[in-house]
Image 1 (cartoon, rainbow, N blue to C red):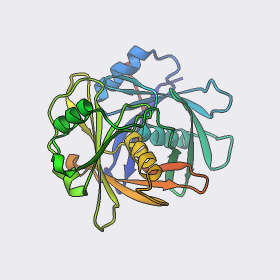
Image 2: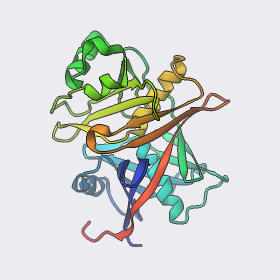
Image 3: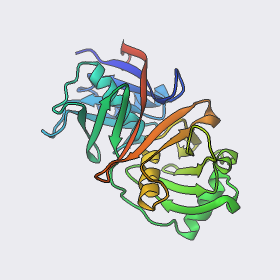
Image 4: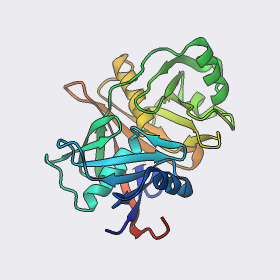
Amino acid sequence: MSVTCDLVDVFCDGPLTGNPLAVVHGADDMGADEMLALTQWLGFSETTFLLPPTDPAADYRVRIFYPGGELPFAGHPTLGTCFAWLAAGGQSKAAGRAVQECGIGLVDVRFGDEQLAFKSPQLLKHEPLTDAERATAIELTGIDEDALMEAVHVANGPKWQLLRLRSAEGVLNAQPAAKAPLGTDIGLAGPHDGGTRDWELRAFFADTFERFVEDPVTGSFNAGVAMHLFGEGLAQGSYRAGQGQKVGANGLVLCEQDDSGDIWIGGGCRFVSKGGVLQAI
């Protein structure tokens, strides 16, 4: 079986406006070191590797890598991988819904009408930041402390820390540090006063070289934020989140709480390249 790679634009609102993802098909014989090496060479925030499921309830299995290692879950890789799997002929057990197997277990993904959405996993840690964590997060993100409304953990695989600000303007005005310790995951969220987006988000993570990188559009962070906002009564029904303005993107994320209380994180996906055969791996 040849190893091929798709390039997918995830959470896009038009061509080349979302977060790029590489999805590798036929990765059965690739080891973790090879997967990480390819991820680091590509330089995207994440690369995924499609594999046969080991859980009979799953439709496919995915391993998710970022340049610093392997992740148990990530949002835009979940949507982009399902999109690529379906386009390659993947057949789900249930109509309009696929089950992804990944490091945190099984994740439901619904699809149709050119939109996909994943069911947000439960938060693994949801509590206020300590005073020391809060001070470090403020320093690393370069926000105006007077604009800070709350600081809380919203970890769901990645160890996201959320700084909720008074406004979208405060989010966009933040001046993040250039460096941060590996494993740092901090994001900002603030409400818009009108317009086509209800909330503005920015998300930062430290890469292998401890560079503090801004992610274009971040599904896992949006999921953590949505779990917090809906859970605390700060959002009702659904809302639209924008992300990526500061890095040349224009991401659009649709966040919805259904009648059963489940929270879905959705958006558009487009192919940028499809089916390229990988040679040097």
